[in-house]
Length: 398
Image (cartoon, rainbow, N blue to C red; front, side):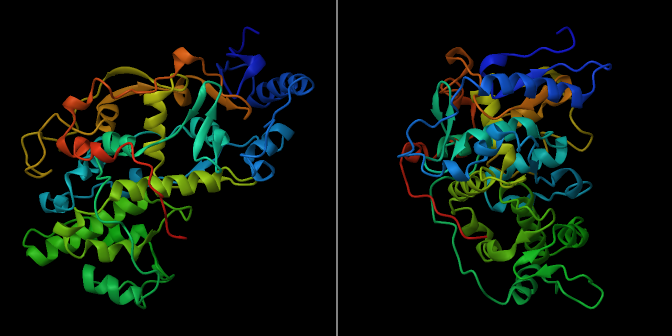
């Protein structure tokens, strides 16, 4: 056993495995499966009572237990290529100071997605309760997590609208360019889905002589791209729904919408879809999910090696993030962007087996923000009175 290190092999959902050059990945997986086969003879996977978990027959864990779901989910996130050389103008942040985090993604280069960690979480997600079922209890992502991590409003006007319309005319009205022209083949607008690469092609560089109308159009395009690549990413790989565009018509009013609750509802929908048998992809705000896991669950949390050097174009003194931004006081996610990390995807192999996430009580932090909310920006603390509400979260059928 010198060539690998397994944690909690007798009762595992996630095993951290240190690979050696002489051992192939196939041999490693086969060895672990043999151990799991012995476990299966004496362990009943459950649930013992299906009166609450009524959808077990449709759940991914059924395939995991039978050994037919051993693949890591694909996660859609497009910020690395989408924002390369995208110029950010201070007028882009009229929507809300919650987009401070998105600006840091552009400047610092984002985070590497730990797909095995997210896959392990999906395997413990239950659609019936909208919670992760762990060995130490149930946990879930809340409005507080969205506000603290991303700095998005979780209280305000609902994010809603019509699901039908003349989308090409809408794009022209608010962005100033017709999306589908003879030179655009294949069409960049299919139904209500607009290609992200088209947005970047036409709006990544603001002209020096741009007037106020042009600045607002570029701001809408940038914010729409953020929605399609980070907050409301779908499984298409290169599209955003223009249904959100009418909400950006007035950028001052756009800042009053509850984008945080919409983001949470969308994540719930994507987790429910990914937890189904046969699912292979996970969409939605996966950065939110990953940082939530790092803050709450010690297993899978990367090690911080050192502080990152600021990118060349970064200058705290430049008021590009708007007058509401105080340099150095940012949403919690930014703290993970400011450092170099060594995580399971770089240091160890992260093998999911899907049955029991091996978490002891001392490896779970139920309230990670207790001592840190005082140093967060005002937008992260503004809606504390609704953090513990139990609203009905709804999301469109997109």
